[in-house]
Amino acid sequence: MTTTPELTPAADTALNGALSEVQNQIARTDSKASVLMAVVTGSLAAIGAAGSSVTLPLVGAIAAGTGAAALVVAAALLLSVIRPRLGGNDRASFPYWSRLSPDEVREELAEDRRQHAIAALSRIAVAKHKTLQRAVDAIRTGGALLVIAALALIGGAL
Image (cartoon, rainbow, N blue to C red):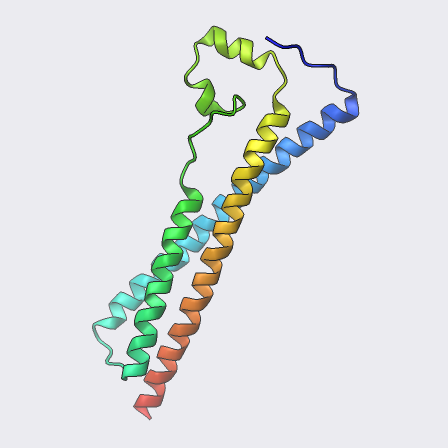
């Protein structure tokens, strides 16, 4: 076991703050993804229900189908945001600790590994944020295409 040098109170506070911040960022992305997933699945359900009772002009049908496909892509991206990441070979996470005996856990926790946890969790948070961005882009695309489909329906009814 290696010994960890003593931290100044300011460094200790900074590590605690950074660890808390990155944990909060992960929780925020999971919450956002869950809310967006509810919106996307509700939209897909509405499209499915309307699809059987509405006849669209060709342009509208293409736009509606492509828009629905974009929402399916968004749903897949959102699922990947909330999917647990259990690799955990960074020695600073519960997946790693789950493979240890209680005595080994105590030995591991005797060394301050917050900086390792911050780095590992930050990589997870950035990946989740990037995937969330792509999902939002897919939702926007799907929404725009569905607006085109609705306009085609209105234009066809006139």
